Structure formats: C-alpha cells, structure tokens
Image (cartoon, rainbow, N blue to C red; front, side, top):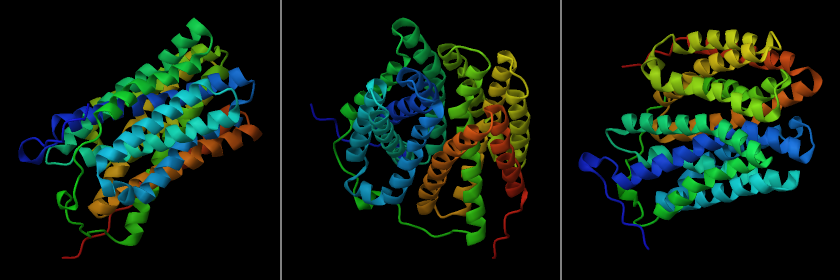
Length: 380
C-alpha cells in the first residue's frame, strides 16, 4: 500500500504524518542511544572480552553524524521521505545485527549501521518539523526520546533476566523503525519548498567558539552515557543490575529537559550546569557505594540535560540558518567519536574512578569558561 502524500497543516505547519514520523524516529533514537552502553556491557560479557574493546562502537553514532552532516544536502536532493525510509531500515538492520552478532566484527558492523541510520533520523527531525510551531513540536519530540530512553536499560535487564542474553533487547528498537519505514515515501520535496539560504553568520571566531561548546557539552554527556553503567558495575552490582540502575542517568536527563527547558536560554545555564557536572562526577567516583554512585549519575543526568540544548541554541544564533544544523551535527559527531573512546584509553591506564574525573572535569571547566565569554557586538 503506497503511503498517502505528505500534507501540511494550516499556516505551513507539518501535517499529522510528519508529526507521527518524528515521534517514531525520536522513540527509536532515544531507546538506541540510552541503551547502547548497557548493550555493549552485556555484549562484552557474552563474547568474553573487555568492555574497553567494545566501547568505541558507541562512537559509531558520532561517525554517522559526521558523514550525514557533511553530505546532508546531497542526500536530501530527492526529498526527506526516501532518506527517512532508508535511514529507518538501515538503523533497524544495524540494531538486529548488534543484538545477535556472534563476533566483535559483526557487532561493529551492526553498530555502524545503527549509528548511520540514527544520525540521518536526528538531522531529518527539524527538516520534517519546519514551520512557525517547530519549537514546540521539537520539544515534544525530545520528550518522546527521553521517555523511551528511560525504558531502554530496564528493558535490556528484563530480557537478560528472562533469557540470559540481554543485548537482544536492543532489537526492540526495530519495531518503531519498521513502522517508520512503512509510513515513509510519497511526494518529494521540491526546491521550491525550501526557504532561500541566508547568510547571517557572526564572526568566524565566535562561531568556532560556539561550535566548540557543543563539542564539549556532548562529550561530557556521552562519557556518562557509555561509561556510567560500567562505573555502576564496578561498585559490585551484577551486569544486569547495573544496566537497569543506569536508568537514573537518563531519568535525570528527562527531568531536566522536560521540567527545566525554559532555563536553557538563561545566560547562566551552561556555567551552572558545568558546576553541577563537577559535583556529580565527584559523587560518582568518590566512593564504591552503589547507592551514592547511582545518585551521582542521576545528578549528572540533571546537569547535562541543559548543556546540549543551550550550547546548540548558541551555535544556531551565531551561524546562519542553513549552516547551523550541519555544524551542530558535525560538533556532536566529533564529540561522540572522540570522548567515549578517549575515556576508554584512559581507563586502560588508570582505574575508571580516576579516569572519569580526569576526562570530565577539564571538559566541564572549559565549557564554563567558553560560555562566560561575551558574544561580539553586532555592527549596525
């Protein structure tokens, strides 16, 4: 059955199909990103390898953001719907392969496909929600992502408790992805539909500093996303229990992004969040008590919740509209590619309790300092 052609709502708002598609895409994206740390920990157990040998797979989302961000305009030439279907199917295949892979090589291939598909879905979201009400719709989409992110770790733990192969739970993400692929297709977007490009970028140095702030913010977030579950396991919890308890980090992010979204535009949002990151890092690493560590991860989730939207907002304000989204994707991809792997290299040399603050605290300080510098004055 051919999908119905895309219809916009009144005043240029996205139609109900686009809203449904964004909801499915963000549901899948939230589940996959929040569950990747636990999935890799369970995979390391199943394949009898060290977690550090697999941690880099979490960075494939970053690789995908770099690739898709650099080629996004070319990929969109046929319109968003064909790319949406291809992204959903690619991510679904990657998730299933990661869930059942018997070797590290096949798991890496699955992670790469999942990362590429997720990256395209992330960049397509604002494309599908163009219009005067895009901000509110994007906020709701982020809320969907947070909710499914909260569900991911306990879902993996539940599958592990039932069948002993908890990483199979990551394949659940294929359900919304296949539903999304079924809705995609139909009328293409013509060049006339797109707004004419404008160039209101600020000074190059200011744009570069805002770009670096996004890199630092995402780097801090993904250090906890990937390694927080390992820190919980190191306190003496079982692998499955640590995976379930790691939900506190995603829950903290959900509370922060939904409950305190209005604070993201405040001038002091990033410095205050950076200070809270420092406190959370100390809580996570100062003791081997699992309860204190879990509380620290929850606080870390609250702290990093506003870092990404606040720094991305600053970048979009500094760069021209047609460049902002691509620059944001490249910044996120750079951070996701480098930060978890870099922390893994440190963890090979130092204990994770030492490596985590050594990696995160300088990032938080640099982020606060970068954001406190005033923006350049615009010339009349």
